[in-house]
Length: 158
Image (cartoon, rainbow, N blue to C red; front, side, top):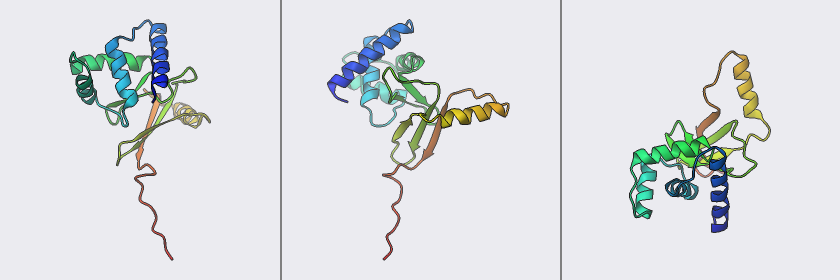
């Protein structure tokens, strides 16, 4: 993410927080920036370590958890329940709708891809689940497997 994209994202995050009656504090912004630059999801303790490496005033993990709660409540951050890690939303712009989220998690390299449900297949799945009389407690789907870089390549036969 370049500096211009980062500035735009932070402006949007500020607007999103204010619209929800929350404030994007300096600490909150720094945690978000760490997540925006991270290549893989991070635990609260990993975030705490990274924050303390770049900031003069240290932060406690308990404070990072509170910040993550705020960021998650305004749909800027996702918590991957299966991993107990956090990642910045890949769709941090005005077009993002967080009704349903789907994540593909590589069990080898820990790369996570947030999928957009543009064709509403996940929404249809959740509708079917509700028709069966089951009420989901969350609106995200996590699928573990191997990404295309980690998946074994088929052997070529002559």
